[in-house]
Every structure is written in structure tokens, then in C-alpha cells.
Image 1 (spheres, rainbow, N blue to C red):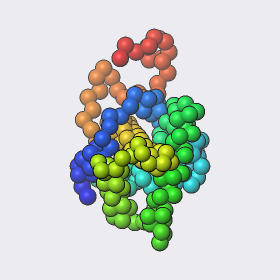
Image 2 (spheres, rainbow, N blue to C red):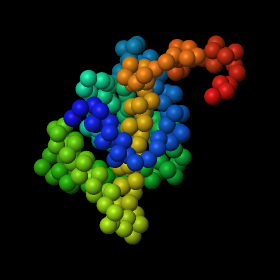
Image 3 (cartoon, rainbow, N blue to C red):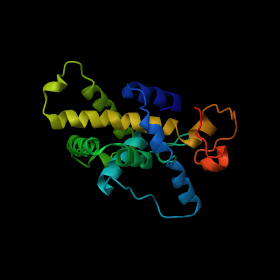
Image 4 (cartoon, rainbow, N blue to C red):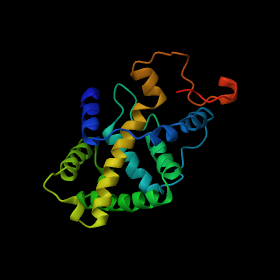
Length: 205
């Protein structure tokens, strides 16, 4: 699948605009860049356990794999999702997300009983997610009448897709190397010290 087709697909299946809090979570992306530059250990999720984080990483890599441009894993999308849910969501939202994610993971493994979703190769994983899109977007299903846990899995599924696409588009490598970037009023400084940049004053926009 070509990059432009993949992005068209992910934008279509997401079906919602990227929410404002995404930007807040993305501000922590510089910490990852600094850690990589310093040769520190691989990112350790702060909210998700290892099993949950592996599923989110597989989803992200399936949706936006590395091709002629950086993929979701290359720009740290799973890390940004971990920080979004763990640091931006309130306690109730985090609890609902985790409950829905556990049900989603259970369903994904049950649908792929031979090996589990994480063991699927790229093509099979993409085909499976396309099937899930059709399932969760089925207009004949009255989702509000189904058990809360199933509806929660559906909500998490689309929440994750929104976050994955939004985090990828808003990452520095994509913003400066893939998309058209005009450095006005100046160079891209995602994590500069406000005192040094503006004398401590807040940005107008």
C-alpha cells in the first residue's frame, strides 16, 4: 500500500477531528528525542502495562508502517498515546479507556485464535483492521443497546485511531520533513524555554 493510500485510509476510518489535548501530549515528545540522543534505554510506558503497550504499538505500526517516510513507531506515536491517556485524561476517562482496551485486546486475540493479533504479519493485520472498521461502523448495529464493555471496546478502537493519526501528523519529523513546512516566524523549536524565547511571555497563538 502506498503512503498516500494509507493516509487516505486512516483518515477515512478515523472519522473524527484530532482533539485539542493531543497538542498537550505532543509537547513531551522532545523528552524522547533527548533520551534517544543521549543513548538512554528504550521508552518504558508510564500508564500502560507492557502487554497493552505492545498492542497499541502493533496497531500504530499496522496503520502507519515505515515506507518511504517515517512510520508511527519511528516518530514515537505509541509513547505519545501513553502520555496522552496517562497524563491528559482524567481518572474516569483513563479507567474507561483501560476497560475498553482490555476488551478490545480480548476480541482481537479471539478473532485471531491461531496466533493472536500481535503475531499477524503486516498484510494480515491490515486486512483484519479493515474488517474491524466495517464491523464497528456497521449502521445496522444498535451499539447503544449492546453491553457497555463491547461499546467501550468500540470507543477505544476509534480513539486509538484518532490519536495515532494525529500524533503522526503532529510529530516533528513529519511536520518538517514530509509535509510542507515554512519556518515563519522562525525555526521549529517544539520544546524551547519560554524565558529564553519570549522573555517569559506567553505566545499569542
